[in-house]
Image 1 (tube, rainbow, N blue to C red):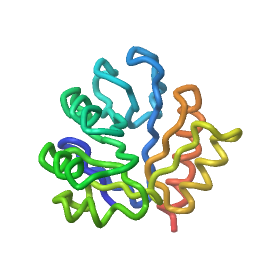
Image 2 (cartoon, one colour):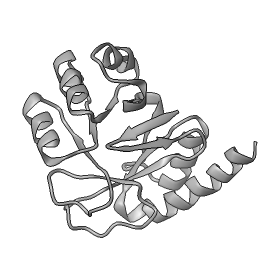
Image 3 (spheres, one colour):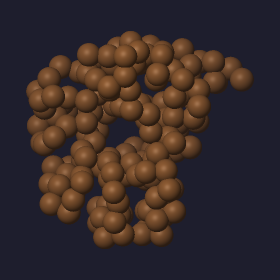
Length: 164
């Protein structure tokens, strides 16, 4: 599996990405983070940003802010078309990957529900992330406070998957 974030094309065959969820754009982020989820512009330079877009206005804000990845909880054909035009990657529910590709998004710009692991609201985020990665999850969304520990688990599992 590959994921295109902006001009970068990442190989996710064995290594998952860790997404830090920031409460505020200026919050510190552990170096293990590969990208950040923010609510608006102003995130740490050098890291791609993800924004959630539940409606057309939120999508336009995400695109205007320069998000590389947009989470679309209820994607419409129009929202997917806009993301394709803007060359941003999307996270869509499990059954919407075909709809995203039909709207013009190439496969390396679509993260389907089974590849997306959300461990923000779980009691044991490191264990949940590890299980998710072993089951094929390649983008792990976690609280900023857990990024270092989740990143270490991701790195161990990447080494195991590479050795197979």
